[in-house]
Image 1: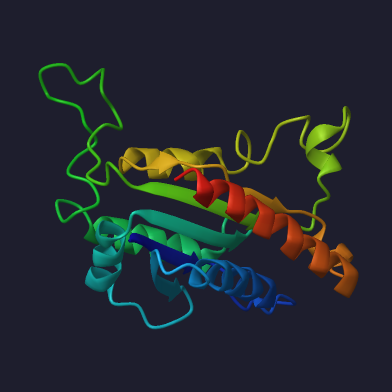
Image 2 (image 1 turned 90 degrees about the vertical axis):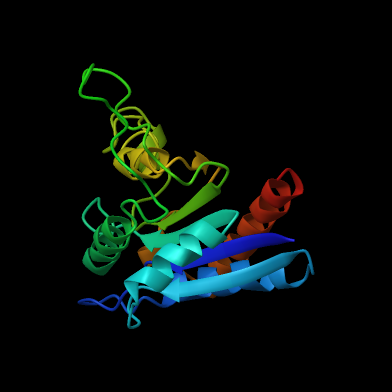
Length: 201
């Protein structure tokens, strides 16, 4: 039985109610719950957090699934605080032991001190920006993908802990394009992604 830990990084702030990421989490849970091969634990970063229990969820899981909106080209402030607090709690406690270097030769092996080897993670993000902002010449992100650009540091953070990236999914034009018709399309496309991804795990 695969153990799946789902983290909802959405939060209420300004005009955002965090509802879309809750919906994506529900789609993920709905998909996984159809198969008895998955045991699921969840966290919503707006809930009261017990740091040690969160560390234990990371250690327990085979796959961690992150759902997050992107605000001002970063993850939301509560999600960042969650990561900072939980990963710090996980120092020599299941998440990482060091930065991987030795005092004998401190120039090499940075980022190899993680303790979460054997686990995989998947990232979903939601954007106001359309997909074309990342792909068309002359557009804002200069033909740099979400994963190689804005979320590059997020992926390195997970690699630092020893986890392996599996293909994620990015929802674009959510703010202006979240019509009922498009929500149906989002769900269909995301469900197909989950089917393909978990078939190969």
